[in-house]
Image: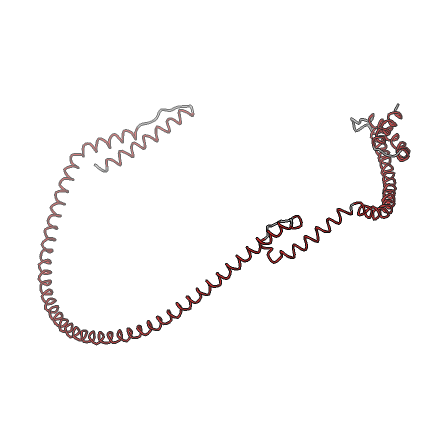
Length: 352
């Protein structure tokens, strides 16, 4: 049953390849035995399942099966390479034979085609010659010929019209160019005239500038002379003014010194009087404050005595004797609070 399955599979693959019967038979003979061996090992391998590390025999069988399948695959690859090399050599041989036959037949075929198409070939040659002739004629005007125009397909009248149009456009271009040259020549002449006129005006302007500069220098010299005289007069007036100012400042300083001395004398007298009054007022205020403090102290004396007596009573208080640690802690805190109260009474009574 396995052999039938193997043969059927090989037959299907080889038949679908489209090879010649002899080549197909060669492939079957070369690979059938290897395929059959692979199928046998496949059946064994599928029955090997290792689920525990103690299955030493099954693991060894798996290794043997893997190595056997590896050998079959290597042998199949060697057969593949050998057959492929034969196929390449066969293909090169077939191509070489075809090239010999093609080299023999193609020139004859081309010659017969030329004889068969003789009228069309002659017409094509005529059109090519006509194209070259018309291209040569219209070449000077090529810039004005419609792009892509097929000259050999034009009738004589159409070609003559195209040539005439191109010549007309060229003449128009040449006329425009001559007009442009004349216009530029006239513009150049006008620019030259303007340049000369500008140079003349520049010379005149430079001469006028020299005259203006001379007049300006003369005017400036006169102004400097007048300014020097004015400054001399001003210096004279300023010297007299400074002398008068110094005299007035000396007199004013003398007067201010006398007034300052009188003012300082009066201020010293006033300051002495103020200090005496302030000392008398301070003594009176101190006397009054002393009397008030003594009066307040006398009024607070009974209260101070009472507070101090209360503090003494607090000092004499004894906390009860207790046994538990909790109660002892309460008594300890009470003593601390009483001490704080006694300190507070002493602090406050000092202020009374």
